[in-house]
Length: 150
Image: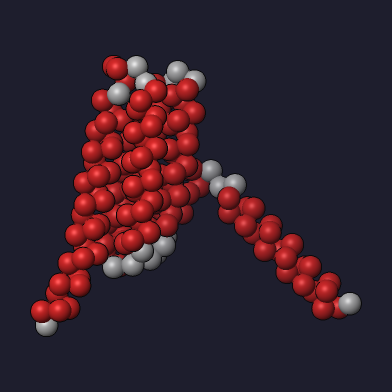
């Protein structure tokens, strides 16, 4: 009986911790990002980018174009920061590349729903994200070629 009680306490504690981590606001995540060790920055940057992607989608649907455009700027900014951190540490390159691709795909979907005059910032963001993906792919495969030559 004691083992079961202990097990249940651990499960509840883990659930509470996970729930709290998911409920962080974007501002809290940005603060954490600034104070985070470089190894944690790729994950945090991508979390912020995904959160802002959700916000941008919601804001565009509500007709709040200026706020949505600011969110798109954050998506690009934190994707760049995540890419830089992943490149610097040589860790999570593949994960960041996959996530940046998913974000770019979703932004393309959002762009198709917008009025013509609202599309350019989203198109520029997609192009920048594709540039980041290309840089990440080059970084991932450049290491293999350097190791073979040695």
